[in-house]
Length: 122
Image 1 (cartoon, rainbow, N blue to C red):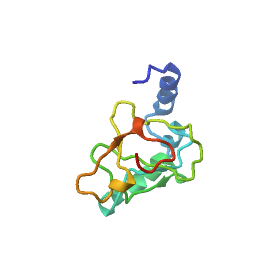
Image 2 (cartoon, rainbow, N blue to C red; image 1 turned 90 degrees about the horizontal axis):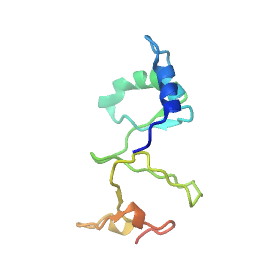
Image 3 (tube, one colour; image 1 turned 30 degrees about the vertical axis):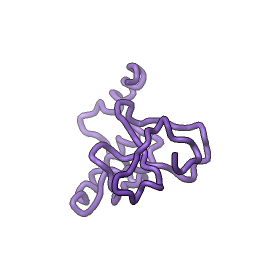
């Protein structure tokens, strides 16, 4: 868990302190937000208008990905930094499925802390 951040709390309170939320208020909370993967498929399509109003028209609302009930881990292949890693959620356990295990009936997963940068398999 992160320690309390009074400045962040005040910022969120300021943005949210309105009876009627103006369009794009989500972008004010997350000014560097470029996309969200919070909807998927036609059953969620009716949320598109609402998400666009909350996040702003310049934030892409992407879907079509599959994730487990526990969450979803993504990667950016164009990122070249070898020393940047940040868990968005601090109170969870994540493991990786090496590429050589993708089509195995009983795959062996590895923990994130045992993975090596640049290695495809352990």
